Amino acid sequence: MKKATSATKPAAKKIRAAVKKAARPKKPQPLDAVVCADGLARPPWAAVDPLLKHYYDTEWGMPVRDERGLFERLSLEAFQSGLSWATVLRKRDAFREAFANFEPDRVAAFGDEDVARLMADERIIRNRAKIVATITNAAATVSLREEGGLAELIWSFQPHMTPSPRTIAEIPTTSAESVALSKALRKRGFVFVGPTTMHALMEATGIVDTHLVDSHRRGSSGVWPRQ
Image (cartoon, rainbow, N blue to C red; front, side, top):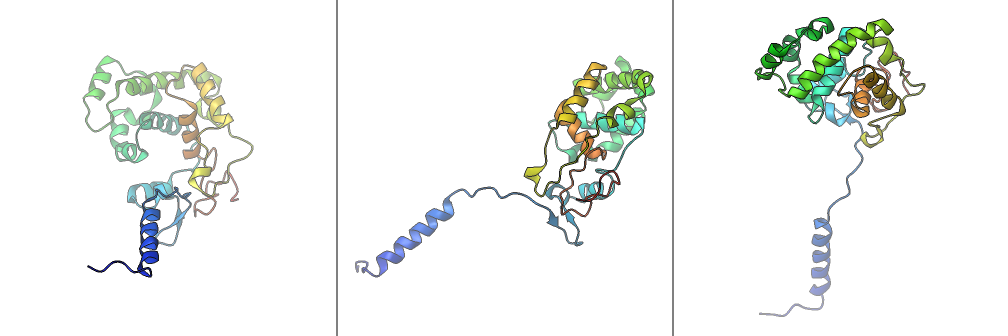
């Protein structure tokens, strides 16, 4: 067998160096808006799944100002904690049926038999703590009417400015307002309303606009101008 010539040695070194470089873990790149097949830009989480894409295009970030609507969103955000929003969204119709369309007065009247019924319902997320929390929050929502109501309280924490993120990494998960809203709700008997959950609620209901700057939905709520 012939020995490698001096001319082949540098080439072999280059190959080994290239292989070694390719094996190194790559730094994660910031995620920005994805231009989908329809030519519209969306965040990565809403760019593939048809259900999430439709939700993003028609609901997410649009103002919700009625008591029932906000109670539903607050409840579903609590159920989503630790899970994906897609999981909750796929079960939303079942949740509405199981929880009396999230009408606060009806849910507040749920008792032990209802908890047992809900725990046996395979169509929803069967987490006892979250089920009981929803009933507790329904009662708190009814009581809050004496102070102007759930919608008035939640919207009172709308900030003076909204973020202008260009990448997913630039989207905050909490804010001074979501922390204050969390404290205000807890003071009034609400549970499962941590700052991160409340920030997600504020994003979903148009109180803040965290659509990526390049997204086709940026500024669509009418609450905030496109920036």
